[in-house]
Length: 118
Picture 1 (cartoon, rainbow, N blue to C red):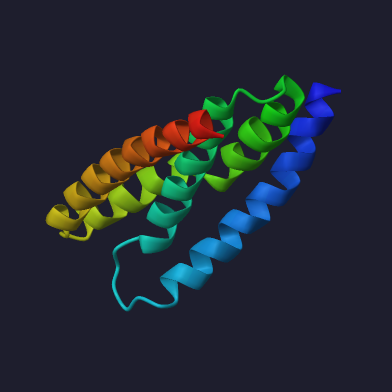
Picture 2 (picture 1 turned 135 degrees about the horizontal axis):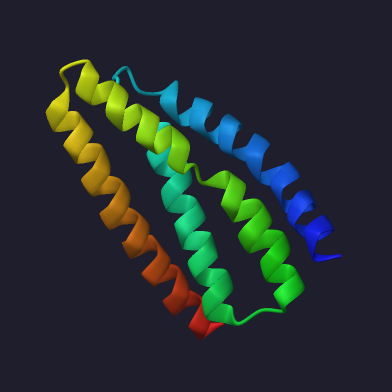
């Protein structure tokens, strides 16, 4: 049953990632991957809330592992960072790493605190 919950969450999270990434990126005329940064931070915030709230394991599998796991994207983050570096935009590559890590961890901590307050 848990595998089905994860698959259901993933079936919603993956298209949400793609659509959110494209919507955010289309509003920026830069090579910086704002869309990927946005989905990774949102997924970190949501996962923090889920874990902080101490929800039912099935719900965490559906929303945490399934939805948040596919909403976030480490592979795109890695690829886009390498692409920036290879294109000579090393400062933007470093900025991408720092922003993703700091904002992601900060969002997860904030989410956890919000989840604890629920």
